[in-house]
Amino acid sequence: MTPLHWKLVIDAADPHAQSAFWAAALGYREEDHSALITRLLDMGAAPAEATLTVHDRLAWRDLAAVRHPDDPHDPASDTGLGRRILFQRVPEEKSVKNRLHLDLHPDPDTRDAEVERLENLGASTLRRVNEQGGSWVVMTDPEGNEFCVH
Image (cartoon, rainbow, N blue to C red):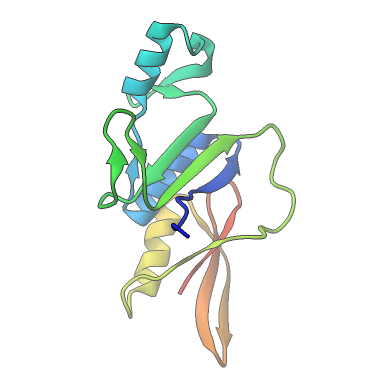
């Protein structure tokens, strides 16, 4: 079987703010879909109300994505073809613990500095865990989604 291409999709109140946070947090690149959007608008295949301007370029109103800078991507749409996170706008707020979360692994002995950097980007620390099997910091992104820094 050929391995499947996949992306992680995260519900968000503000997909563009989440995209900016996670791009900075992970060192990823925010995808620029403006060329694709312009083509679709010019063809009449997408309505103008489905777009907005972010970073002085056209973007989808309800979708934003980040991708690993070294992974392949479609140059016509800037859509990542490797490690990618897509944020989609949903009307409801987050109400329960995540069933899936990211674990970040900074260089050894830099966890505290990484936690501080992430807090400066808008993350919050929930708790520090020290167990026999290891230690990590449980954090939340600006919309309250949990993640861990090991």
